[in-house]
Amino acid sequence: MRSVSIIGIGETRMGRFPDRSIRDMILEAGTKAINDSGIDKKSIEAVYLGNFDGQQLCGQGHMGPLVSEVLDLGNIPTVRTEGACASGSLAFRMGLTAVMSGMYDIVLVGGVEKMTHRATDDVTEALVSAMDYELEATQGFTFPANFAMMANRYFYEYRNVKKEMAMCAVNAHRNASLNPDAQMPKEITLEKALAASPIATPLSLFDCSLVTDGAAFLVLATTEIAKKIKKHRVVEVIGSGHAGDNITLFSKKAITSFSAAKLAAKQAYNQANLKPADIDFAEVHDCFTITQIINIEDLGFAEPGYGADLVAEGGIALEGKKPINSSGGLKAKGHPIGATGLSQIFEVVTQLRGDAGQRQLKKADIGLTHNLGGTAATCVINIFRGL
Image (cartoon, rainbow, N blue to C red; front, side, top):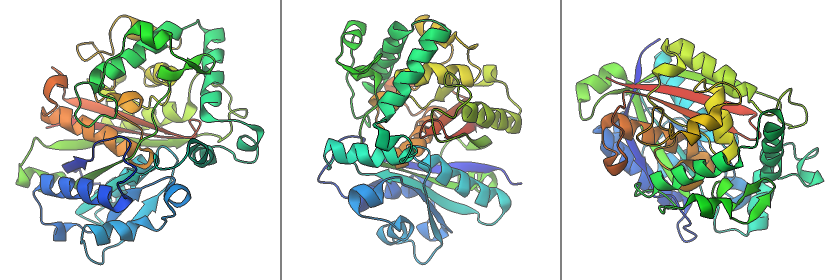
């Protein structure tokens, strides 16, 4: 299998843009990625696009050809992937596999979502299609309710970590304040986070991620091609894992740890020949703050029940021993579902290149992305190294 690197990255700002079309966001992010790569777009051999709710919220399916048309890529093969919030990472996995296998030398991978132009009830209805609609959604389940139950169970099995959850939110907003692409680039205090309005006990407003419009694109190529271009520090993909679990919450063997994440992490670590201690920083799927604490444990950064300790001691901060979500994460940078996994990779590549400005980490040689879909029914984890 061939070595693969990321040679181009581009994204829109994340936020509420009711007047922006899907085409417009694809054009901006896709053009940025191609220009950043330094290649002629005629060199792109295939497109892989992640999108979750385009048909329900925008009436737009068949998005692969839309990308090739908008970016004037010609009659190349295109694919749209759907895996709930992991849709973008699944597109990345398909593009990665295609280049690793020798099928193509250069591919474009993207993700896009437009959500904020619709009423809250419409967005909620679209989002719950990522759970079992018949057995859960029609019974009144929503994702805040699902993850609130996980938090309550976590409190029961270990201890109440409501304060540390709020600290995750404070850290996310601090990092987002340094990110020009973030949806909510403003800091919050711990007191404000703890006093926020309840959503689904014990989750309150600042425990929940955002509804977001946005797009992110990457250009993948063989590492041999990347080294010839030499436009940026070469960023190689050294590990990738993809695993799944039951879609329903009630059928899972445990809800204070995500088996899909642990399996995907094991695959990625083994492929990269690395241990959790070798990871310099990570972008993890903080759809809710309790999820971030569980993710820290599932990735091996802390023992089960002790993820909150890493948060409390400042370990996840930009200057901490294991920086988490330097971008601001889903919590404050934004959660444009189909683009989220690629937006995470955008941040990791930016850090590995040393281009993150005020939020640049002192040590950024190996970074990891962790992207969940639905009620942790899908997980994709990728590991990157700066050469």
